[in-house]
Length: 72
Image (cartoon, rainbow, N blue to C red; front, side, top):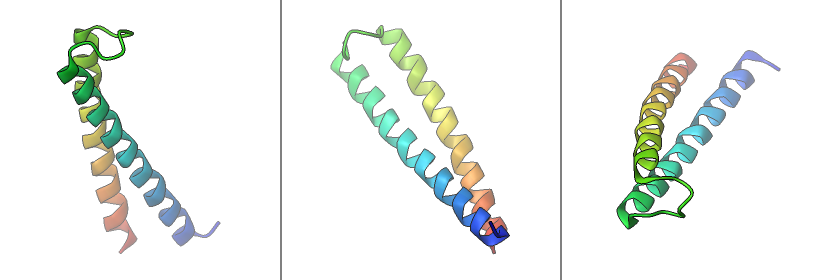
């Protein structure tokens, strides 16, 4: 695989991860707002998952930004 192809592939994977995390965060927020979610996790666990997903989203957004700047 050529270097440009590798960079494009890395950007695509990072973008997919960002989108997935955005959906996860929306789900956590909806479950927290609903009060009980599906009952598998406590409110405290849901809030912890939300904080973790938001932190991970920040990291993946940074990675994506670095990859896109490197592309130029």
